[in-house]
Image (cartoon, rainbow, N blue to C red):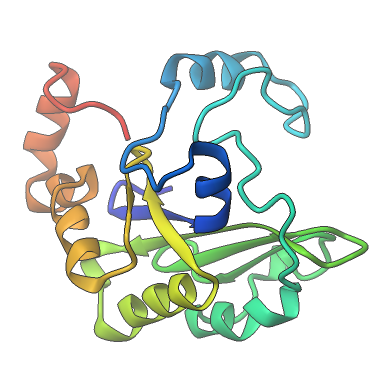
Length: 188
């Protein structure tokens, strides 16, 4: 992920309600456990041995077929060549700008994961509407890389983007790196 990109995860409301009995606004993010996982993992197929917002299989129990999602994914752009022949995984759009990741079961083709990255320097009404349309169509909330959960609303999304590290970086890259180095900016 580039520093100018804002990452979003589509989280089914039914999964949040089933787990918490309500729709939370903040989920746990275990940054230290992820750091250790990435340092020690040799096979990235291994599931983490801890649980947080980014390790939970939010789409478990879904009945949404990947073919229902692909027309939305294609609005990000064509399928990325390196994922054309992969089983259970496709990426659409451009890795350097806006892209969307679609994970699905290899046999049943049922959706298992859905996330996207937005280039905040190239945001436009079309891509914002597509993100909101996906979330509303599949009854999802949005979750950012801080594990903040929020309704699919363009104004809310823009507010979150404005408060992100990506926005800080785009405003003044040198100041961003100075603040990051001194601990004034936390990783997202």
